[in-house]
Length: 331
Ligand code: ATP
Image (cartoon, rainbow, N blue to C red; front, side, top):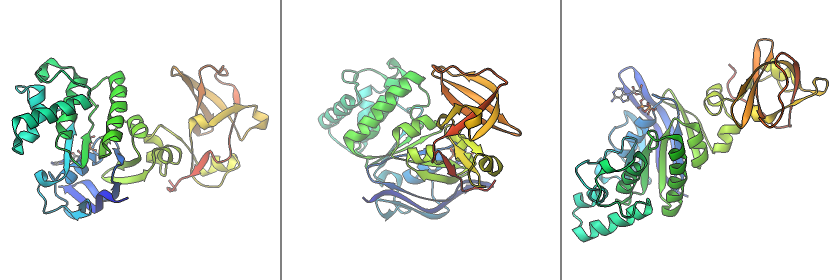
């Protein structure tokens, strides 16, 4: 497999701000690649470096193996879908979708045919003559998607495309985006600060913090084997065991990660760790128990169908061999 996009030690600073700080990454052709991280971690700047609206100060951005520095944005085989849709309010849905084709000089019948094909792909057949103001947020986002796809980009850049939608619609659109990506087989590079979104949709996830990629791996690896404290906390709030607690539980003298749902309650006499049940939070499908061990606390996720013990009692914790993972960092 070849790479659609490759960053070689790319940096882009704004004054004192290291927006992108020596980032190297490879996005394989045909992959759904998510860039996940908190606000200000450099994700959007990376997208703008790919689309050509920013230039690297140092390093190289390669697109399909070619150095992209000399290629202007409109000559790059990429298109962007934004969170705020950026539709033209005075144009119909069909003309919005066909806009890129008009700029390229396609004749009217070709424009309409291709726009209608894209509207069908995003399940908006029959909406072509409406104005964007007559559509819901989810429908506008579909138009924005159709408008980007009509140009047949080889790489689609999506910048928090579902950020403005409510949860239910978001989940529905996540499935549809994934299925459109499968259908078209083009590379999607998707920026989000929602870890659930990144984990459920992507083939690979790059976790950003302060302009750097702190871990790049499959969703499962990111979730189950967070490499640093930051990844452990940002992606699904994992437990981090100190070397002392790890040794107490029979593990090595290292910082270890352990997922809350990998822990089971058991009889204290037969446990890896004994602690005090400090608090129980009801989360619908599960309860989140906080167990205290001196200065440290671990979270345990228990299906809410199971009866939780009383607060203040001593509980035993155990887990399967292999549920803990050594972390890179020593702090
Ligand atoms: P968000 O999720 O909020 O969009 P992000 O991870 O996409 O955040 P970026 O938009 O890439 O982050 O911004 C990274 C850093 O660079 C931020 O501190 C931002 O304020 C700064 N920055 C981005 N663009 C500019 C600019 N044109 N001028 C000055 N600073 C900028």
